[in-house]
Amino acid sequence: MRSLPTVRRSFQFSHWSFMFAEIAVWSFVVLLVTGAMLMLFYDPGMSQVTYDGSYGPLRGLLVSRAFDSTMHLSLEVRGGLLIRQMHHWSALVFVAAVVLQLLRMFLTGAFRRPRIQQWLIWVALLALGMFAGETGNALPDDMLSSGSLWLIMSVVQSIPVVGTWMMSLLFGSGFPGDTVISVMYVGHLLLAAVMAVLLIARELLVRRHGHSRFVASLPARRSARPLMAVATFGMLIILGFGFQIAPIWLYGPARPTQISAGSVPDWYMGFLDGALRIMPAWELALGDYTLSLAVLVPTVVVPGVFFTALATYPLAERFLLARRGRRDALGRPESARRIAREAPARKLLDRSRDTPVKTAIAAAGITFYGLLWAAAANDQLAHQFQLTLNAVTIFFRYAVVIGPVVAFVVTRWICLALQQSDRDVAEHGVETGIITRSPDGGFHERMAPVRQERDHHRELSRSA
Image (cartoon, rainbow, N blue to C red):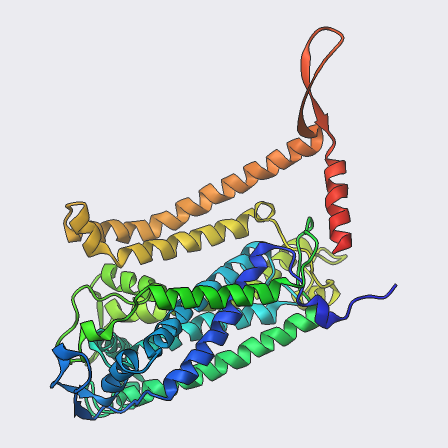
């Protein structure tokens, strides 16, 4: 019997959650295309010029060449504003798709061998996408981006040993200096190139290993990829055309001593903003040097621990399970390396309920992230609910510690309850809705054995 080539099989999708990766890929394609078009009109210079464009309220002001070229692109180049807004929306959608893809891989166990490399690529894409978004936000040199530069300066200065060197590399002799936009521009391009290489590498790995699948998968569809490309392109065009984002003419040019009211970062950086707001003003004096923990911990330590935990989780899980579940003839645990060599490649994905601890860890992480994200709006919450800002801040300080623990316990309990429900169904059968009358006059519902349903799903999987 002739089998399909690996190249064709790699583009077959049998579950809707596999589309997150496709959205990430095609939104990145839009990022590359729109970014290349923006490069034709953008000038990363910081020398001062007099604005004489079409926007009257700013005419006659001294602005940087970066701001002037962005204004010209937005308001005077035909289709320029659409391209710029599509570029910004594509960045937001890309990071969201990467987050959902990582969450899908974690919950289903798709990060295990032989797909550990794919997992690491997606983790790297999340970190690089966040950095690329921040460097891109700084390029217009408007009032909103100047607030981001202040935050970047504070974070860099809080890093021990190399902070001063990094500060001079970014800003030159002083803040904001006359080189930071050029440095951000070069960094933005380099990050985009590295992300493109990683996505190509991920594509090659998918062609090599194929897609994982669930036990009860639907028949695969090869036409899903072009459909997702068209859908992603269309949605980004709608977002860029109908929903305004980053109107720099309302923000005005950057001023080192000013910041726009109500300035907030992009959604994926909200958890860092929230961590900064609720972190106590701790400092550590080491001789003549003062270490600002209030900035270092929420902006460097917390993200560093988060991405390190994501990257090392597959190895940690394999090591712990190997030590706990496999032992040699003498009762000693076998090495994880030997077990990895003997273990076959995993193609079947987990159900979330079947791995309660892993699912509970994911729920705890989502709760921790969500609380930090909500803490970024502590001032708005205090205003809307007529509370003091201090009371809201203290609430989030306790919530980010207690909330993940509660989420872990509750999620694990739900998974165990669902497992018990599955065992009851396997023992008694599936409800059919058919009521029968017994010879003694009683009424009972007819139960169908689970084997019939499993055989049906197995036939669907074979046809895929």
